[in-house]
Length: 533
Image (cartoon, rainbow, N blue to C red; front, side, top):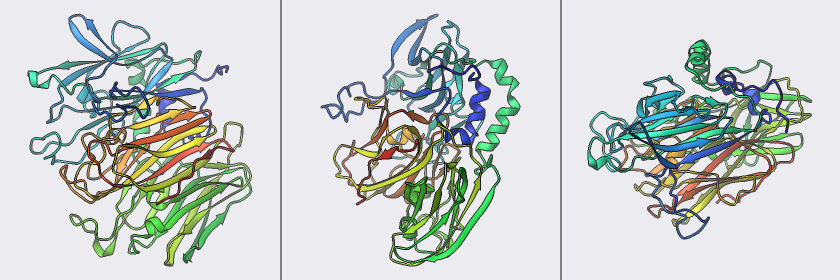
């Protein structure tokens, strides 16, 4: 495929893309593959084989290099052109992870373009500010995980600032052992990066350009931290109805082409918590039903029973636990908002179905604007499944898609009957018919940006979690919901995508997993439908 002359990629274009909502709904130009490098257990050589559920997902790397007397461990390498889009690693804050220096070598240079203390780089204490770099935690207690001194946080370090390169990238870690006891657990890490088609022109990261675009960096950061920004104005349509059992409230949109820019559902915050699973978002675009998902996972707020949060009861019967990220938001007053752009060529219908047994008063509103439909335009999809897992090791399927599109977000809700940590399982993502997953991770919590368990509650543009039932790292019982939105780390696919999450690893727990998945697909793309239990 020929690469357009005007398709130069740079820090500037990548930052602009992060807040360009329309770009998400089109096939990317220039084309790229989203790849992953991680410290996954290298004994996992055969899907479903003897060691498929092994869990030594640390101290793995590509090779050791001796550089000026230093031990540098290569943890990510690409021959470019491309861009690093996401880095996750546990931090050396109050735990048994040693300090480390991270180095980025671009375009075959023997000198690194970027050298930093790894913890500072991934916690907004170095080059990149929040929200591009952050610690994903609000916890101060960790008795049964890696122990923490008083006042310290649990420690998932994240970086989402793009680091582009023209002709290759190599990233190394140099550990610094303060004691012999630290000579282990060094290399927990995940890198996501774009690998562009050969011939794509990329301007590599430089400190000069970084300094020159400081105003753009500030603008993009503020936009990312404010849900609902960068929306095109347009026509507003709304309806308010009492929806009975098996009823629906739907809005037929004007003849296209057009695009939904904002979709909002308002419910009574004092209603029964069951409405979170009884009310399902239903949408059809160009005579294809592409969205059918309960509001619990569609908006990322999760499902919680009325009495499931003894540590933090809601006043006046309110059951909604707030959270926000770039494209979705839940608020305690019963407002649920979605900002994903949803284009259509000729016709569209959006609304809610009530699959419960009681009448619910709801208001549905949407903002529309123009859209130029072309061969790169895609429909928005949202799928959901739920199942009580068996309690033994298994790969639990989020979704399986046939066709061309882009994977952009997911929300996982778990109801755990035990205090034991349930989320040790790894993600396995297969793209375009791969026989072995090109994305193989180090744990459910790491996929969602945390480390050694998940935070009690957290919101950011990229990951979020409404307040969970239990508090502290010794108790994982009850309900918990986590979301990840993929912007520059979105996953394009040409023919298919399959996403599995390992369950039942470490301790065998029968927990209920419920996943909502958001993706874009060219007309005709379909997903495997599961029967919910």
